[in-house]
Image (spheres, one colour):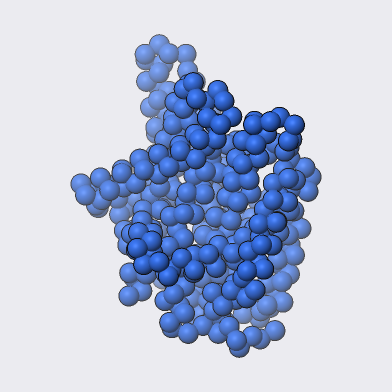
Length: 368
């Protein structure tokens, strides 16, 4: 299944880097908005008037559209990781893993410990003040650092580290199974066949290896996704609507995974299109370096305190007020996190660099 028409050239590679970097901040917004609702996916019932509309919109974004963010990050990570290992060497693999200790393992441990420390501090502080408020955790060390990380959005980093450790096997599979192998992985992903082992999700395997496939075989991601992009965009919207309607049913996970495949491709097409607007492009590129900090810090009570504060306002008693809060709270959360990032970058750049794995500059700038 060779496709010479989508071979990557240096100019398209630079464009891909720009597309990826412009996507990072909007994708982190989707990650934040995912956490505006609980884990449960309620059924969509249009008999509840305005409240039904609020549930439909919030579920469409949080439990459906937002699901494209992590697969895209896996694709980016797989692409950058295997691009440096297109020709496999064990020395290159060892060098990559050493770098990942700094960029992944240390931040992963630090930010999980941070949320544990903050939680325990609040527990003892409220107890000291005589407030009957239980915030502490009785989770095991395994749960805190692996089963379901204390800073639970970091499950992506956990799975990513597993993929990188297993990358010799993944490389062999991609190199020799080629497109047919990726097709088999796609089937496994769409059929929701999971091993149930933390760190080894089919989402991680398929999308990380998909990024690796494009890197190893030097394929042009933008050209691949751009085929029939207008038809794909319409199809993506229909799949999003369908997945939302199936919320809370036995078919939802299957429907949303089909949507994710189309949504990932349409998102790449969209941001490739947005590159033609220089001011927007530069603004998104300038924000990209802050995305990892926002990712690791927003769940350290910032988003929950904002939701809790908003719930006490009179506006939160109406569905339209809830809808306003649903979109405003993530924006405020991003603004707070971005402000903390800028402050730390100014007064403690070394600390910021250490805790974010050295992510102080975008990959586009690194490539240049």
